[in-house]
Every structure is written in structure tokens, then in C-alpha cells.
Image (cartoon, rainbow, N blue to C red; front, side, top):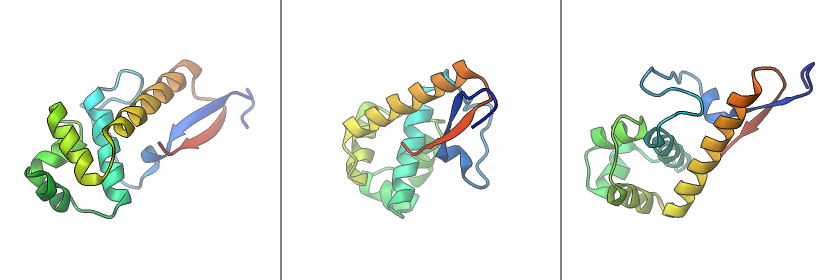
Length: 123
């Protein structure tokens, strides 16, 4: 626990080796929804040890487009999100719930500052 005794929440996905965030995907409370959805879809795909090609083929899209969606550079339609979720066996409501958790955690972090205890979240 830090000197101030205030906890700080850190999303575990930011701890991945080699993962860098560019200016088009800002951290913090004002992140774009497409970025959050993309991170969740990528995390789910990697948790299942599936490739971009495998999931893209199951959905009927190019792996390049799926990669852009996962990186938050493309705004997928609700139909496309539903198809990717279906291919991953992820109910769409779980995608929405996880997105709310991540956005809420980001806002809490932004309001607290950088000192405190670190809690790791795996949403």
C-alpha cells in the first residue's frame, strides 16, 4: 500500500510485454468505445488461442479488417460486433458488460491520481 493509502486500479491488459498505445487510442476516461470493444475482442481471441485468420474466416471478413477492429481503428457495425462475438462464443451482453467495467475503472483511475495501492483487474 502506498503512503497515501489510496488504491490505484491497473488493467492487466496494459501490462502485456511489448504492447504500446499510440495517440489514436488514448488511455483514460475518454477512450473511444471502439477501442474498448477491440481490446475485449482481442483479449477473448487470445484467451482462446485463436488466430486473427481463424476468427475472421468464421465471421466472413478479412483478417486485416478484424485486426483494425481489435486495434480500435475501425468502427464496426452492431451486426459485425455480433458476428465476431458469436464466432468467439462470447455473448454480446458480456462484451457490453466488460466495456462498462473497463470504462468505469478508467474513470476511477483518472479521478484518483497516481499514488496508492495497485490492484490488477482482468475484465
